[in-house]
Image (cartoon, rainbow, N blue to C red):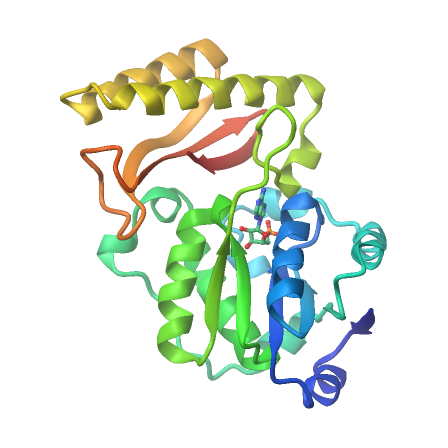
Amino acid sequence: MKLLLNNKLLFETLRPFDDLGFVPTMGGIHKGHLSLINKSNKLCKKTIVSIFVNPKQFNNKKDLKSYPINIKKDLKILKKSKKVDFVYIPKFKDIYKDKKKTKMTLSKKDKILCAKFRNGHFEGVLDVMNRLTKIVNPQKIFMGEKDFQQLYLVKKLLERNYKVKIISCKTIRDKSKVALSSRNFLLDKSDLKVAANIYKKLLSIKKNIKNKKNILNFLNLKKIELRNNFKIKIDYLELRNINNLNISKTNKNSRLFVAYYLNKVRLIDNI
Ligand code: AMP
């Protein structure tokens, strides 16, 4: 596993490879990231993982400050996996020195879910993914369904502009079915128990949607119920079509999207 700590070294090292799988991360490596790495390792000759906490996608300074960073631990886990050929850990200037990049904007139709509640977040994500793709120049990029809206928007942008395929990977959960996330490192045991109970409740809501005539009404009621029972702030609880992210009137091709705060930590999931 070779460390690439600047762009010059990255360009020199990657030049010979034309079957490169790329797993972009913000560190805090967990089994969710490792599942993307495993898939890349199976489908591509070489796998590169990046660790870069992109300040431009944080709409909240406190959130950026508290983001769990432990590069030493991450490198240990990545090395132990034996599935990673290169780890790219760029500095801010490696990514942002090219100032000419076009400004990313979202269409009105895309300003939903997290885009509605985290102003500027996806503009930052699209910008950094555009820059990373230009720098790393991979054939495939592996991304998790846990961040479904991110996957949807990045796929739309990158597959239109680059010769790259975005490979979506299933959400990996812990034993109690809570979706793994670097942000879970900020939660204690009792928070995680609450998250597990919320997941159970969401699962039953999703099942019950089938019989409901007015899904919007039903979900609004369930949102209030969840908020009161678990004392959580909920940004959204919406059933949406997985192909176009439109509001859905049936369970078919649809997922229940949720974002909520547990102890000031913002968690998202889709079921
Ligand atoms: P992050 O480091 O949180 O920016 O995530 C890097 C990549 O890992 C993104 O494509 C995420 O969607 C993916 N990812 C994060 N958590 C999970 C998970 N529990 N299961 C699958 N993929 C995940």
